[in-house]
Length: 178
Image 1 (spheres, rainbow, N blue to C red):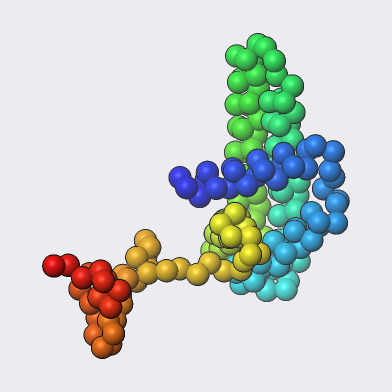
Image 2: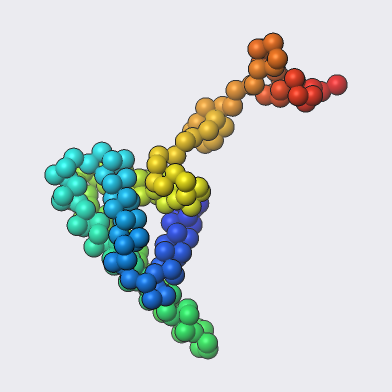
């Protein structure tokens, strides 16, 4: 659920920013796309030939999603009344987005393997996650910390003598229980 929300949030921010007069062929947008594609190719372990086959499919998918996102943005921006009809139109656009995504998954799995397609999806999510979480990473692989789902449990920090303190508290800083 968090991943879906994250993807929708980034998509909305991207669409909103570029829907206000900026074009998809803006140099910054092109640089962003190149960085994203390089990240996906690397993380999904696509060979050069797989990348050449797959990336045109990916670009077309992103172009379609961008157009649908722009439709939603314009619809929301210009809606002042008849909100029932607006909601119906938004639902139709979102259904088109879902259909576009389904077709992309199928085309992608046919162009590369289903496993590689799954890796592409995960890589795209990580890319967006990294961009939102701390733009300083600029699409680098996330650094997982202990205690996270699927990660290692946090280790107790050593006290001044180098011995682990109870419950991960550092006794040298006065966090000791009486």
